[in-house]
Amino acid sequence: MKKWIAIAGAVALLYLRSRPRQYIANEVRDLFWDDEAGRWRSNEEVSAYLREHPERVPLTLITSEARVLSYLDLIQTNAKRYNLDPALIAAIMAKESSGDYSARGGVGEYGLMQVRATTAQWLGFTGDPDILYNPAENIRYGSAYLAYQMERYADTADPLSWAVSAYNAGTAQTKNGRFSNQDYVDHVVNYKLPRYTLLINRAMGIY
Image (cartoon, rainbow, N blue to C red; front, side, top):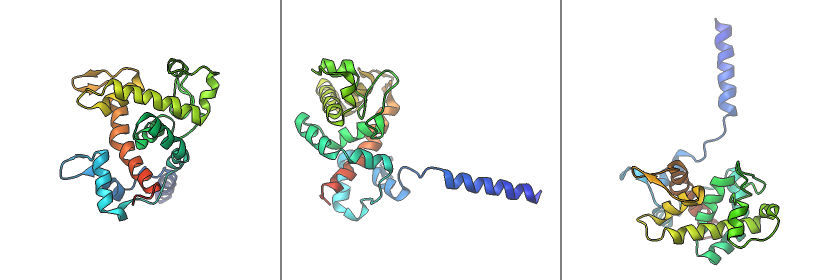
């Protein structure tokens, strides 16, 4: 019996050591979660909080975050071009591809922002679809499509959530107050966006 207990203990230890790290440590998660209100802080609230408490900006990036932020110049360029929050572009990129420029989606999406060739062509792209693997082209057309959705849903009660849903689904659809892709929206808006706001602001030296 002792032998089997020892084996089980060794297996458990190996499992714990092999598990991927949590995306974000509990003390950092506290930046995003408002215990008093019982909800996730908004993008703006996280920014305001960190301006008051710059010591709380986390120092450690996971691999996918480092990949996404390696495209910061292109993200900033297209944020200015299409009047978008650079953190939103980064958040979409992180959710869609984890910063992998060679990613290919299940229905033919290309690259960092998982842009479909038909969508890029509708936005004026005329080249070989494989060019959409190029980060500069991909972020340009992905950002253009995101800006289109932001404008399309500008008059809704929550333009950001509607635009994020539509970016993923083509058209945002709701039922009983929830988007058809609510998990996607929640992950981008409540998790990725505050995180990349924090990281980009830190990278730009605001804090």
